[in-house]
Each structure stands twice: as C-alpha cells, then as structure tokens.
Image 1 (cartoon, rainbow over the protein chains, first blue to last red):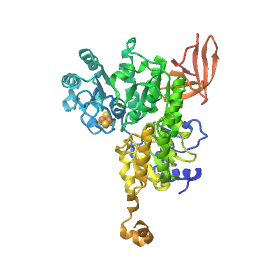
Image 2: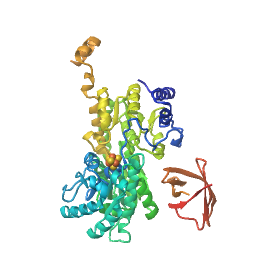
Image 3: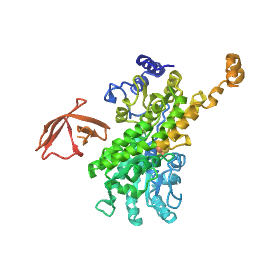
Image 4: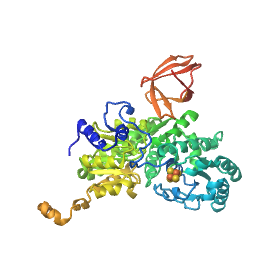
Length: 493
Length: 70
Ligand code: SF4
C-alpha cells in the first residue's frame, strides 16, 4: 500500500472510532491524530497524559514502575526495596535489561528483588517496624551497598505508613542515604508521574549531598549522560563516542550508574539528556540550582548521531568541536558499510511504532538511514512536550496515537499494513500471529545496544533479520498455498 | 498561583514552564523588561496572559517564580 493521504488517514481514524460508545468515542478521538508538520503546538491536534478509559486495553504501567523500574532500579550499588506486597517487584524483576558491571549480591544489586513482602498483619498494624528491621538486615547481609531506596507500592499510601520517618532514622544509624520514594502505583495516570516523583526524590535526597564539598577534581569537559538506562549496553555504546571526542563522562543516569555518580553530577559542565520524558525534571532542577545547561541528544542512527555530536560540541571549545568531527569521520566507513549492506534489503519498508519515553520519535532517524519510513507512531505515557518534539520528525499525514488501545492498534495495523511493527512484549505475539514482522522496542528483543555507531550496526542487522526472515512466507499452510498460487512453490524451491 | 520556571531557550527566547501542568510555552511579550526591572503582565505564544509584580533588579534565569493568571 502506498502512502496514505490526509483524508484517508482521517477516514481510518473515524472508522476505528466507530465501534465505541458515544462518550468513549469522544474521548478517544482526542488521542488520535493525523500528523501535520505545520502545527507548532501539539496540544492543538492531540491530547495526552490523561487517564486511560476503563474497559479498553491500555499498555501503560504505574507510578511504581516509573520510579522503581525506570529511574531508581538501574542505580546498581544501592538496594531498592519494593515496599509492600511481593508481586510488584517480583513480576518485574530484571525485566528491563539494564546492563551493569559488578558482582551481583556483593557490590551491585541490579537484578535482585528486595521486598518487604507485606502480609495481612502489616496492612492492619502498619509496616514501619518491618521496614526498619528490613533495612538493618540489608546492612548485615550486604554491607557493601551504598544506600537504600524505599519504593512504595500501593498499600503504603493507603495505610498511611510514615516511611520518611523510618528513612531518616535509618540513614542516621547506617550513615548511608536512605531515600523514601512516594511512588505508590495509584498516583497519576501512568508511569510518567513515577518518573517525576523519582526525580523529585533524587532532588531532595541525593543531589545536594556534596554541596560545599570541593574535593572532586573537575575538568572543563565534564558531562553527565542523563536518561540512558543502558538497555542491552546502550549507555556504553554512547559513552565511548563522548569520551572519544574528548569529554569526560562523570555520571551515567541511571543505567550502570552509581550513587556517587549521581551525587557528583552537580559538578559537571553540561547535562546530556537522552530520555527527556523521564529525566527532564532533574535536569531543569540542576539548571536552576547549579546553572548547568542541558541539551537533548539522539544517538539512534548515523544522521542523528552526527547532528547530536556537533550540537553537544557546540557547548565546548574547538578541541571538542574537532573531536566531534574526528569521531564522525572515524566511524564513517563503518556505518556506510552497514547502510550499503542493509539498505537495499530494507528500502521502502514501512514501520509502525508504539513505545514509551523517547523512542517513538528518536528511532525515526535510524529507520530513515536504512531507507525505511515510519508511518505511525505513538507513546504510552507522553505529555504535550513529547508530541511537540515528534510532529517535526514524522512525515505529513502519518498517524499519531496516544495511549493507544489494543483494539485501535490492531485495527490500524490491519488497515495501514506496515512491513514491521516496533512495540512491546504484550503486542508482540498478537502481531506475529497476524503475520507481521515485529521487534520489541523496549528491550531491543533481547539484543542491543542500539545507541551509537556500534549500536546502529546491530539495529540494522536486527531489522533485516526480522523483516526478511523466511518464516513470513510460510504463513499459509502449504496445501492451501499450492492451490492459490502455484508459482510460489517453484520460486521457493 | 502556579510556580513557574523561567528559562532561556537555545534561540534566546524565554520559556514559561509549569511543572504541575506540563505546560511549556514561549513568552511572547513582557510588560516591563529593562535594566532595572522585569515583570508585569506576561503574554505567552498561546495567547494566555499571566501577571507577576515587577522584580528589580531583574532576576537571572533560570529561576522559579510565582505567577498569577491575568
Ligand atoms: S499499581 Fe500498585 S499494586 Fe500494581 S504494580 Fe503498581 S504499585 Fe504494585
């Protein structure tokens, strides 16, 4: 199917909305839009960050997921207690593939699950005593942990436990930071508020810890990588590029990151933001309090990488600017070879995305480098400012869908017939069974990294591997196929 | 009376950011913007109008200020 016109896309949205009851239809209509690059402010065409409708299938998470799963979880040398019943932490344990170096259980704790395992009596009589005891046990069993964070699950807010008081008491006892995070799952409409709450907790309990301590030796080229969670090693693939151009990466937030890196971040010269959605709050805070500017960058695909390297370099002197050009030059042969190899196999293929955070817009450039086109994109939990940044990246008359429902997504796919879908595990098998190549774009489908030049090579290979997999010709049973299109058998032999 | 963070964009214009509302707009005009004071009525590019008592000397951005709806 060739590109859809504006009218066709609008008609498609209307058609999909048709099955909803009147009220739901009105509500969902606001979340679906046809992209128009002319529009400056996304709020004119799409509504986001609203409560999902009861009864539809949404793919969102909760505030606890945003705080424990995304922001705090990857800080590897702290222990993050999933405070409340055991399930919230256990079912999400190690699912995000935040890689890290260290000996798990000794000095790093990323893939372990710590929980206060609430029982009925804790709900009835309160869990503060248990929490107190738990933190003491942690200190005995894991003396090399650098701090503790208390990630509240729903019941904590409901029974009104005073985790702040426990945190203060234990921090004094242990002489380590103990951070209470009020990220109960019922807060807000999605994991997005969890990011915000987690950022605020970092602001209140971590960022100021080294104020007035000048013992850290700084250089004029200190930067922090913020909002890179090192999925499949992403942050490492990004970090090498920055270091090669002459910058010193002081902190990684929070993939493969440590508590002391976070504490030292206020000493850097520039904050580099990859995932704007989950970490813009703390960057804004550091800008206001410490005067550290921040810049958004995008390390997906050579075009965007080059743009971003030059943009980052523009904040520094000629040495770094030359460094950036040198890095781009150095990897040129490598990425051109990748493009030469895969572009002919992927050219013209159409992709639909539905992810969270930054990817619905950031990966567009990488697909375009491979000659592919993104014809629909959407976010689970974006806000207006994310769509502001998306409109310019997407082609005219392409589909935008916010907090898409299971039904809408399937219908869109049936009509738009993309060659590839990038979304999460919950969508994967539905679409694969519909015969459409699919990549998980949250966990990189257990591959990665996808950031940086090294990541681009893997990204291109993975897309090719998925799209051109011979299994997609085997969707019809051989005996049915033979009667329908006899020539296919000959071609396959 | 929301808390508003004012910061400078790369292009030099001022941004008006309300964290609670996730609203980020460019400031179109400021009633008083001189060497000695900053404030008064502020109009944003989306047409909404806000008010703050003029501050003198002008604050250095980024900073958080309390605005009223005008
Ligand atoms: S919504 Fe509440 S109970 Fe469910 S996972 Fe989140 S914190 Fe746990």
